[in-house]
Image 1 (cartoon, rainbow, N blue to C red):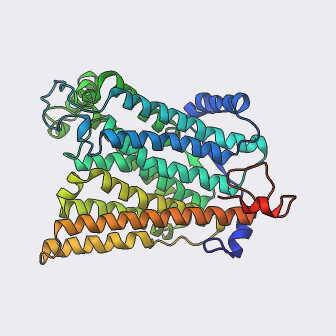
Image 2 (image 1 turned 90 degrees about the horizontal axis):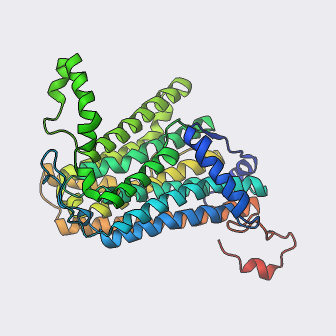
Length: 430
């Protein structure tokens, strides 16, 4: 009789079976065998799969904390954008030590490996459960915005280009949400040949390694454009002269090439999966895309209405996006497992709608909002939304543990009257 998981949800959990596949060749021939070897050789049988998942996330939290310490406003990693002439490589002026980028790369690889190990450990020990699925994908959701923020620092993308920050953030968020949304209806999580958990994390680690070797200024040079993007664009322009008018005269920086490629892949994934769902289930499922699309709209709208907010508080604004994103995705996953209807009006998004409306009134009708009040409102909003999310995830985890009669981080000690003393059980915590 839990708050989030009722009696019908308990019955659904007990009959739930995870279905999914990763079509990535990198995962099949490299990442999966590596994770299996680590499980077989290094992982003790008593270690819970959720503990492995948590250890991986802690590496990314540590990398995020270190980067926040050295680059709280993003601009510390490189001089302001726009100061580089075509073909020139800017001098290294950032205050972030090179080893920070290497640590981020190592953290990403370790997170990816441990994330692949947890499922194999669960099958090895016979401890697979719906909680493991929710815990694993929940940690992936938390890592998505943190990893994107770290990539921005590693590539020297600062607040001078807030829309680039935004695209970097949603390049991983779009495929994640759409894949979870698809699983909600089809019952299977199918990752494409090129996907974020496999190639995406490897790409992020590679970006950080390049920054470690050559500095973030490498991403503001035109190496990719001069080497292959520019010549390819020139061939396209010669075949279709109308294309020439859309090519930038100064070329495209390396980080712009990377982000553009990631954005194209994300949008392609969204369109293809949406078309498949509409074809099989009609238009009604599109309603469950509303929370995510409204989040994207509110982010862009608030930047247009109050440009200085993102420029002066980039990390703060990206964290606000991340908290709402994790709440939506975790809610979608939970409702899929317990066969509940997904609420397309999310409670944590209501303050965002109110804030957007206030900014619109302030801009188009009459000034009513002071800038300091805007920052205070968003700080209170982020604090409340983060506290609500943490409480919800903790309660949901405990309710699933109660429903399935298991512990979250212990696969050895029995629970629920199976030979464990009451005094011992009382000391157990989530």
